[in-house]
Length: 120
Image (cartoon, rainbow, N blue to C red; front, side):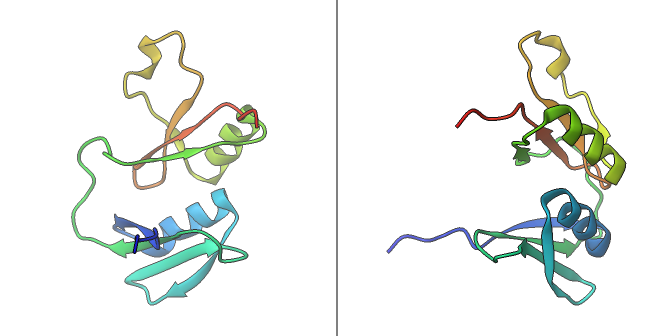
């Protein structure tokens, strides 16, 4: 029997604030909140949830895991994410002229990428 991905867990200082940010970016809904941990899921509750857990330590180095977002409109999504509290970050990607994505950080500094629109 194989396992299935149930949720992705993110350690953070402020679970409610980070859940608010990611639920707005992904159009998810909060499905659990006890202050120490907050879960968000798709509106239809299909697919893995994101679980934000309070952790006392701060982020120190580049994430080893990050989210890649595939928007319909790349520039509009970068602008929208910025308006929600994300910031652009440079982790060395600007050295490569072939880079077609934008690296951003959520309000606690966790990197994520906004890709160019995918051709299905």
